[in-house]
Length: 301
Image 1 (cartoon, helix red, strand yellow):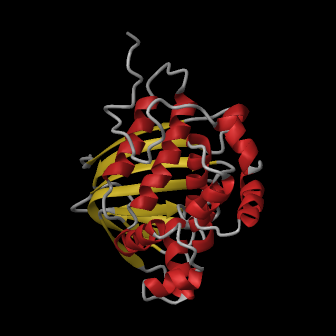
Image 2 (tube, helix red, strand yellow):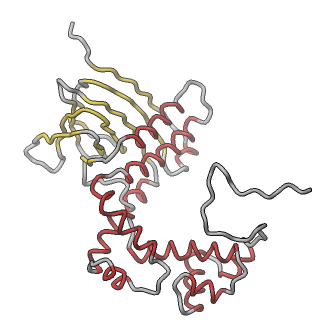
Image 3 (cartoon, helix red, strand yellow):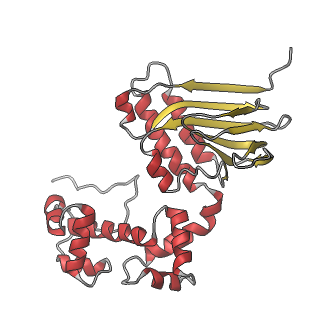
């Protein structure tokens, strides 16, 4: 009898209708190690993220009519998408460390549009598999017997996993972050997208491509999110007039700012302030507090 040179652990779940309304549900989780037997060729009706954290192996690309095997070297991600045949396996000698999560849900469409799920890329190099493995481990811990919050905890971990995988993607981490950091730094300047691009030696098209690849949205939407977030902070935490808030976040025309704010937020700036405003001892600060030492009101004497 042949010796098994691998170890496998997996659990599968059947979330109910109410859990599906969370947007993402976890259908299964597994952790495997060693010279695992090949998977497929097969086709599934849901998504699977397979994280290879050590070792090497191979996979085939669905659009490769010759069925050639492509090398997989850790750290790497294998995407399995619904209705698309897949076939992969660990190196028969070296093997690999594999963690996987099966998932589905209505939020998959949005995560795909944001670039967190890539149906056209079955093999994605990663810079670091650690955060993704940690998210998968949380699913595994949630699978303990008798856990009444299994489906909720597992769903939350899948959201975290998709973010971790997006952050660890090797093709965008190196060149994407500096562009976004520069845009965030200059977000409140009254500049057009073309002017932002010129500041970084790029064409507007190159900037749009870089931001779309890194943030899953256009430069205009990325800047707008930063500006409106800052505007909300100033409206809620200060007594500055709306016209001053508008100028602080890059809009010379307060009326245009108010229309834009109302359209995106769903309420005019004045009404937002009325709903959110509060008196904060010591005044408003833009400095992010240390999570280990959150702001506290001194005890009354």
